[in-house]
Amino acid sequence: MADAADAGSGATDGRLRVILLGPPNSGKGTQGAALCRRLGIPAISTGDMLREEVKAGSPLGRKVDGIMASGGLVDDDTIDQVVRGRLGRVPDDGGFLLDGYPRTLAQARTLEEILGTLGDRDGNNRGVDVVLLMQVPDEELVRRGLGRKREDDREEVIRERLRVYRENTEPLIGYYSERGLLREIDGSRPISEVTSQMLAALGVAGVLG
Ligand code: AMP
Image (cartoon, rainbow, N blue to C red; front, side, top):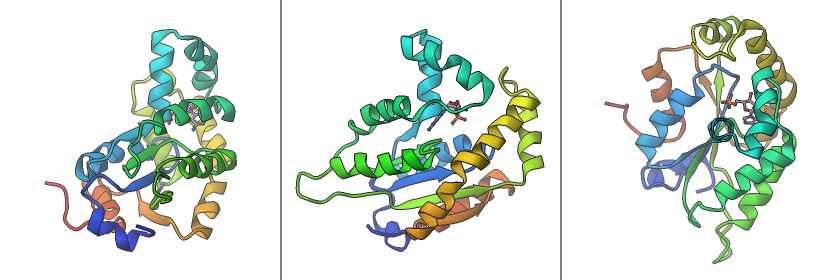
């Protein structure tokens, strides 16, 4: 399953490997959940995993709490450990949807390396099939962020997250585009339309009921 055109045949059997890329408040969580239900794959969200650590008051949680609250990025080594553990539990040829990871070029390279060590029992290493890029205008992102009730979603933090995305995560657009994996999605459309666009980009027929 090397590209999105092939994705349709195996798309609903839990094998598709997807990265959801997009700025904060572009709807990755909502769309990721819908896609995962439809495709039968687990969502892997580094943000959710870190928030659980914070809630549990673990050493990792205490380390990342302040960084997350300020809108900055947790360091690559820490993220690497979190993701390695989770991806290690993915079956050899299993699919997944990554939400909020990778966020830096270093993380993208590490992901390739991690996937190279997974699923190679029969010499069949499998990387990512598709990267879906959600595009939403900045002012709409800020408006959506302010509409949320989360304490860390004050306007200055929202704008800081956006700045960090532009600086650290946007370079991934070129990285995955060069590899022929990128599909652009207009994330400013209503939720069900965005989901349909994504399924089309994945080569999956039909819309959500
Ligand atoms: P999210 O829910 O994906 O917006 O993540 C919330 C916060 O967790 C981010 O603002 C970062 O502080 C941290 N975080 C989540 N994923 C990553 C990642 N891949 N790299 C660095 N920091 C991350």
